[in-house]
Length: 379
Image 1 (cartoon, rainbow, N blue to C red):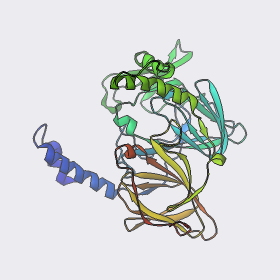
Image 2 (image 1 turned 180 degrees about the vertical axis):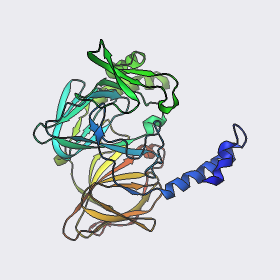
Image 3 (image 1 turned 90 degrees about the vertical axis):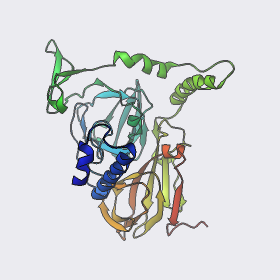
Image 4 (image 1 turned 90 degrees about the horizontal axis):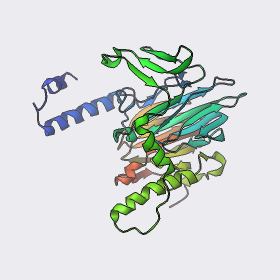
């Protein structure tokens, strides 16, 4: 992108905001068009929390997002928990993560309560909750974690490591910290990493400066008395949010969700804004495509990321073909016309789709249907 070098080196205030906006837009279009829309996931590796992959399409505040696939908002990672694996670590953060079991079975621990899950169940952890998961000792499990990065764009990235894995792996540029050389209490990021000039020590446990905030968000009581003005409505909202997160389920079971024949094909919804769960910021649904068939063709403003659970086939995105197979990730940029095709004449395809539901809150949630799935019998 040599034509952008002058803009990047002109210095503060050298160009107007309008010029910068168009140059930035051109750069974004270049990256989107140059990145693959079907990816092989980076495999899981040892981490401080257990055996997990990095974020597959980047992290908004941690590193470049347009580094592997053409998505700004959506990412995902994978956790691989073999049979008899060491116990994983525990952490908490502000967002509500979704964890989809793609193989085996296991357990999820949320603030002292344990939930069991099986293949194709979805786990939803409420905000501010200390959580930890593990696989069945005999069969283990594999977990797919679709994520929205919008919470990061709001400046709410805060995350705390409460407990390391039983056998943590510390990345290059860090070293473990011990209390009296016996108890592991944190880790040190060495100077030189990301250009820092002094070591940074990261300790296990809650951060004192946010503990009060998290505690209030977990323990606030319901509003009592009349609502006298608009401001009172938002004071009441805190108690409503706390009550909601205490009352909703933490596991959405595969067998409890109905399949629906729609214009787009056969879908099974796990979460969207009208399903009572703490993961209302994303749409998550399964799609099954019969042997040799295809989905409907549609287009929407929001980007989409799809994990291929089973099968093989291809997508058509604005006229361009992208082949995929089991284990791949399909990355669909905003406003792209797209359709999925099952290339196997004997076996169905199973897909897990993730989309940011908050686009609907912005008035950008409508879907344009261009062609119906062949099996759809509606009008």
